[in-house]
Image 1 (cartoon, rainbow, N blue to C red):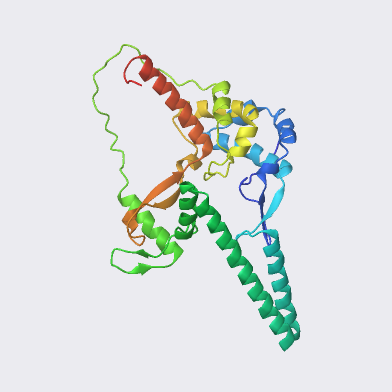
Image 2: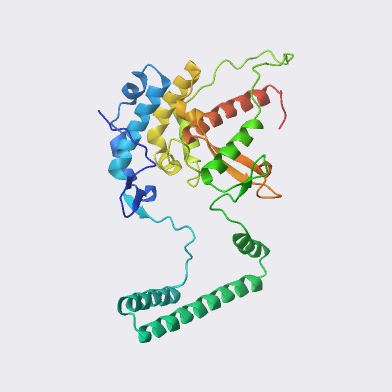
Length: 319
């Protein structure tokens, strides 16, 4: 089966709007029927490298996504506020009044537009005041601080940063380079030196066993809100099709472990700078959060469970 290769996190872009895959409305039953007859042994074991195994696995997924996941139009206006119906109706009337005024340019239409604008402003201010009164009167401290933090914290971008010379950096690409250089400078590299440890038990952990059942259990426990890694593979997709993906991922993990090699994309991480405290312009007050591929995290979790089981069973560590 010849399958096209594409990123399942990407979709279509036109001149007027952007479209992304709507994974929440994926036809999982049809997707499941598509995956059942796939001969994963041929897909996964006829390759010379772990990268080819991963690429073929993703080709099957991306082809299914293109067939069974609809597209949805998205808007990138993150600051758009949600108002109740009566305010949205007033805002539409204000927009209509503005269009009529711009079209005919009369004093009467101008005064109607100003009256409608004032009416909208009063309605919005009254709505915000009543909303804040409700928060105060609810005697809910968590709700109060949540509202305050929304007013104080900006989650859309990193503010102005200061470089080593004391100059302020405004451009996003220069801020990214500045943070990248700082995170790299404080990163601890492995020196490849293994410390000498006295043997405390006679048994050894000779191998890590990957089973479809263990992989499926891990996939079913995924949070659908988990951030997408560099490969664009969605947690929602893996969770809903856990049974179908358990076997190919089990084979992939075993091949990767036996070859002591990871797919190149698994070595890539998306770093997001998180502000800690202090001056927001000081790069030392940011810490990096890395987003790796979900499949890689699942494999790490299985390895960790078996290592912990070995350490606890041999009383090398305590609970």
